[in-house]
Figure 1 (cartoon, rainbow, N blue to C red):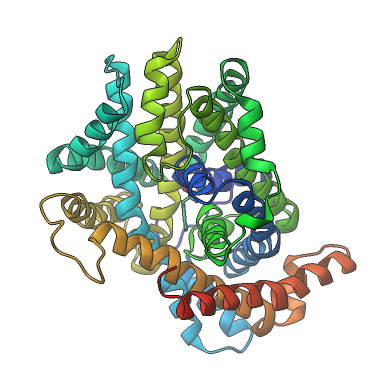
Figure 2 (figure 1 turned 120 degrees about the vertical axis):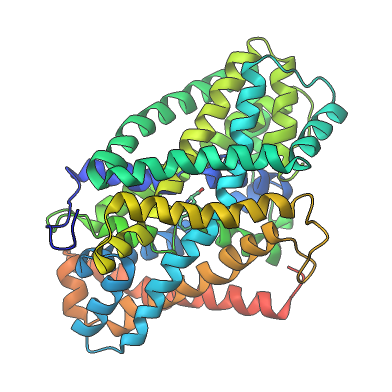
Length: 451
Ligand code: TRP
């Protein structure tokens, strides 16, 4: 598409919802959310998380889509245009840049983890069985210790991702989501049913939903809010870019509601499926990042039909990661095509190459280069820390300030034609509650550096 061609518009409102749910539902829901729930003691984390989605996530999701649609361009141009329209400083364009580049930083390690998923899928398909916890730990350790194996799968995953983005907004991104997302929902429902039949669903339910106020700590609130940002793809231009292809008639408020609901449900259902199987085998939920890569392979090895179920499980994670990764490439590719007039395919593969290089360094940071640390973190953890703990909350805060306080009420109202009372509630929450919540969490973090 040349710079002068009219911009694409999603073919329907459901296409937009599916594509954005595709961005939101990812490793965050199926890998991170369950293990964070596990390490934070279960229900306290889940309940705070739900609160964060309602008071911070949903209002911000609407705000980001709004900027994208109003600006009708990649995040950088959209920010500049909407800032100008509202008489604000062009410095707001920096917010677009933080998103576009931050998304590529996320992708560089996201793609490495997605690579682990492909490796595990290959293992389970070819009949590898992990029978003891020691073997599971050993297997995971062996993978992380092998730079070439990591880079191979990272390369493959990134190629899959870039290949879709290169084909275009409609024939690439929309088509992929329309195929992958229904398959993802079907697999997830099957796994939950399976967990209900052969697993310990009752224990999983109590673990996730029993109210235990004694587990509620500052650390839990902090992680829950960080995860709400990550899971809803907020603060990194992804949702803004997708919103820029949304037609003017479609309701941002209603679409956002469905997107946030679907994303949350997928996390909860994945948690129920994973914990019911884990508990049925007497294993611990609190195993951290290894939950999906060490605990589950053990479960699959001991379960009737485990090979098939395990294959489906890793396929589910792969589909989820794939559609999310696509949304991390799109903002920068949109900028290149629109601003530099580069052909989409070239922009996509060029961007992919840059991310590939950084990702290869991430692979090495887990083994050969693990001695190289900054603030005690290797490159993998640095990128994760920088993006999820600093960039996402800060740019989320900036988005809330911009839409809540800088944009004129009329312009915002024009994009959100809700009944007046609903509009007022949303805007009030965004202007006060969302902003206050992010600031409090940020200050808490600064004053408690270990958290
Ligand atoms: N939301 C995705 C997940 O849960 C990850 C993701 C995709 C993302 N795009 C993003 C996170 C943009 C932050 C910003 O796995």
